[in-house]
Structure formats: C-alpha cells, structure tokens
Length: 145
Length: 285
Ligand code: SF4
Picture (tube, rainbow over the protein chains, first blue to last red):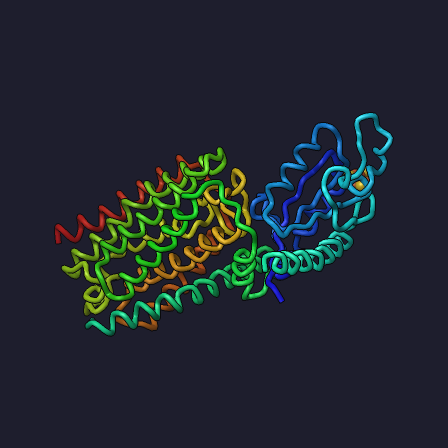
C-alpha cells in the first residue's frame, strides 16, 4: 500500500465552464462536505498536484492551457472531468468554437456526470480517481524496476 | 554538557524533532478545521503528505535547485542540533538565517516569475523578523551573561520576568516564522494560495517533502526558544510553548493576509519598541 490515496492534492481548472460546476467543486471544501477529511487539498499549483479536476468544455483558447497544466504535473497523476461539459461538451457541444470534452486534449480517467455535477458526485469521482492513482503508482514502480 | 551527552541529544533531536513537528502540524490542521466548523484531516495527515511527496516524480528545473533545497533542510537541522546540544544560541540563529538564504536561492534558481515574487517576499520576511531575533539573543545575553543555551537554560530565574517586552516581540515575529496569517506573504500552509504557492511554487515531489520536513524541524527549534523563556521549570516551559502555538493558530484563523509593507513596518516597530525598549531598561537598571 502506498500513501498516494491518503493525500490527494488537486488542481482545479475552469475551462470555459458556465461556473455551475466550479461552484460545486468549491462547495466540496465547505464545512458541509469538507474534503480535507480525506486529506484532499485544493492546492492550486500543478507542480504539487496529483489530481487534475477540469470543469467546462474545450475550445481553441484553453486547449494549450489544459495541455500545459497536465504536462506540469509530476507522475503519477489522474484527470477527473467534472460535469457534462468537461465529459462531452454538454450543452455547448454544438457551438462553433467548442471542440467537445476534455478527452480531446488529455487522457481522462474519471468522468463525473451531471449539469451541474453534485458535490457528492464530485467527491465520488475523486475517490474513484484515487483507485486509478494507486494503480498508476504501482505501474510506475513496476516500470522503474 | 560533556562529549557523549551532546551527541546523544543531537541524535535524539534529529530523530524526534520531525515526529514532534509533524504531530504539531497535524494538530494545527485539525484545530484550524474545527475553528472553521469542519472536521479536519486525520492527525497523521502531514506524514501521509510527506510520504506521498517522496514517492512522486521529481521535476527539477535545473540541477542546482535540489542541492539548495537540501542545504536548506541541512542547515535547519544544524540549527536545531546546535540549540538542543546546548551550544551557542547566536550560532544557531546564524545557521537558521543561512538556511533561509538557501531557500531563497533555490527559489531564485528556478527562474519562475511566481517563485521570484515568492523569493522576494521571503527576503522581506527575513528582513522583518531578523532584528527581533537578534534582540532576543542580545536580551538573553544581557540577563544571563552567556550565549550558551545550556547556561541560559540553567539560569536561576525565569527569563520571562526580566524580558517581558522581548518575549512579546518574539511572539510577534513567531507569526512570521510559522508562516501564519496575517504575515504569510511568501508562502503559507493549509494550502492557502498566494501568487500560486510563493517560494515553493517550483518545488515538486521529494523536494517539497524536504521543505516540509525542514519546517517541522524549524518549528520545534522555535518552540524550543519559547521554552527558554521559562527554562527553570520544564513543565511550565512546555505549557507556555503549547499556549503560544494555540495562540498562533488562533491568530492565523482570524486574520487575512497583510501587504508586505505592513509586515515589514509592524515587525520593525515592534522590535524597536518592545525589543530595544526592554534592552534599554535592562541597561539602565
Ligand atoms: S456541466 Fe452544466 S453546470 Fe457544468 S459547466 Fe457545463 S453547463 Fe455549467
């Protein structure tokens, strides 16, 4: 067992979201949900983060930003797409400037459905991401050997 | 202290200081969370964080960066080792300053604009607290006629009676040293963000773990100095250190961050009034 799942730090990026999902992500930090119980911190710095939480859909403007943040995160890392927009483009899918979900740019590990995604669903998604994170860590150790 | 005893206390310090420091950090996080109406993380969370960071990939911007961060950790340990071995207090303080300089150089070496601002602010913090730290040592010397920690600790009367101003002044800069609000301008704990993460923005994985562990050592050393103010009775000294730390947590949770001008200005005013005032009083007595 590693300490990976015990201290997941996340970085949250708002990619042209309508702010609905962002409010819900922040709601997870409030006393009602208090994700710090699980050691989850909203760290705000990709170089310290383990989990990349993206809300909103991808467009030409933020494509490079998403890629950049992802590349700056040290391995092992996982990506959680929060909300319908981040998963598939959602209601903005048909817009002329929207490319679709986050998985158009970076590999996504967990999709959290909902418009807006509920805090419970987001926490559930992050907890599932922890399993993926642990798996990636084991793989990393195996490759290193 | 004679030969072998010194080494025993140094080894005990190197082993137990991070354990104590990590537990203090864990208690700090729980109490802070309770003050905000949350449950808070488990007590051992800081240890989980550090163990996780050690397992992460290390992304260094350049080769020197790691060395500088290591020197930061090393000299913080040296500081505490000198102190807890009963050595020269002045030397310990200088070693701590050297350690802070290494952290600043490490941040500068990354050429990141965020780390730059963090490093600049860290430098302002050093400027803010250093006069008061020196005055604390000078005050202790004037009372006990020695820079030796062992002599100061075995002084017959509690230093708090003769150095009340210096004690209050030291409490003030302790807020800066512990990186607590309102003076956490270069970086802070509890994942508060300021210009990304201030000085530590560019450190990742094992390096960040080293910075974290260095802070545990540093905090234990600083609380050790607090204990020195009441060293004639160890139980009261430890109670004093606990009360001081709780006070710092309380201050942290009730203040928002100040501008650096206020940090520098208020720290120097406090050093001038409380520190110099107390020393002048001692000199004129
Ligand atoms: S999924 Fe719904 S709430 Fe979330 S960003 Fe898209 S439109 Fe807004």
